[in-house]
Length: 207
Image 1 (spheres, rainbow, N blue to C red):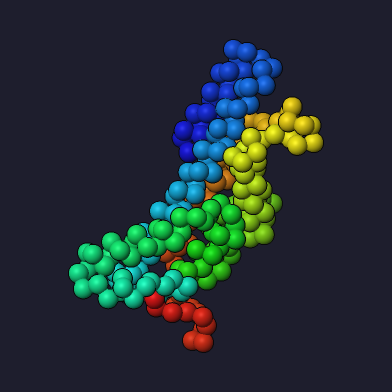
Image 2 (image 1 turned 180 degrees about the vertical axis):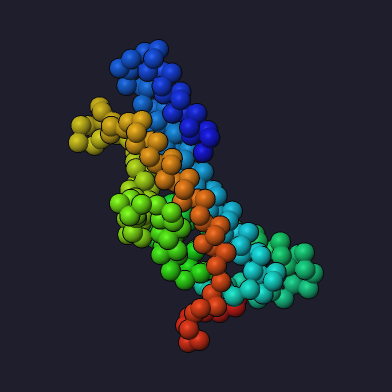
């Protein structure tokens, strides 16, 4: 996240050196991309660490399965390493900046993850700036879509035959950095929640 902020400062320096140069905006695109990549990496690591913590301590999870050939490994260290590798591989193709994928992984460890995230984000804030779970999901989805524009379409506006990029500004980049950082700061609290409040007939298994 600090590297993303450095790219925003680089943008300021470039604007001072060469005003109105369109290529200056690429520093903001880099900041945007770095922010999203950092969050995705953090979420993947967090999910893997929490899975191993629960696996080693027989703490309740749901929708996580391990093959029998891993569960039956006798050596604890080998079993743990194999489980860790399997879970990381299973999650490797998922982009956790996608709200649906993030909710999917968080729901393995707790109930109502978006409600919990919203409560943490709104804590000690004025009523005028409170965020609903839907608003938080909507902002993250918008960020995910813009990241894909930059990563997969070079941020080109297709309506103009590739001769112009989608506009980006410093304020948008800074809002994105602040939002993603706040979301990431609360993820460890949310993912560490227990599933004990799930009803007995709920879809929960200690796998």
